[in-house]
Image 1 (cartoon, rainbow, N blue to C red):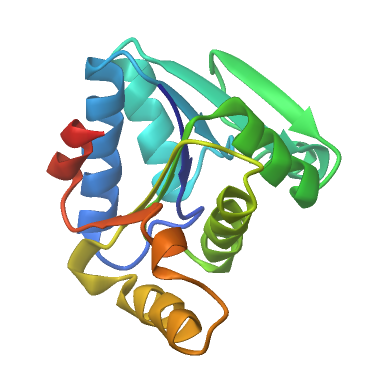
Image 2 (image 1 turned 60 degrees about the vertical axis):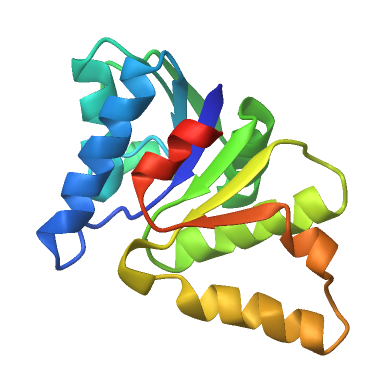
Length: 174
């Protein structure tokens, strides 16, 4: 599987965020999957990519040119795809993957995974959409999606395509 992972370009204020990124990276490499991510060398993104690479796994980075010019790009990736802007980056990451996974992150992570949810709903992409709800991090997103159902803007059938997990161990059932 090619797994697009959306997560923080910052480390967060809890060391467990980096620990979970490393755990996910180990799982990806150990199972022969390919990581597709935002291409950064910093934050939990950097931890994830370096873990996959250190275990001999494959990593595809997707980064806008302006970020590369700011020296944020990771080195020694299997492949780095440069895009003109953030919108193109989101499209390219979705195109490169067949699983899309959100870990805890900031506004960019939320933006990216909600676009994945919308595109899956519209049938533009097909695969697994997974939200890692570590310690309830995405409870509010789940509640918002349920509110959308309650108000008639979304359906239970559509929400069934979005899988919230509480442990990375649940990835083994993908």
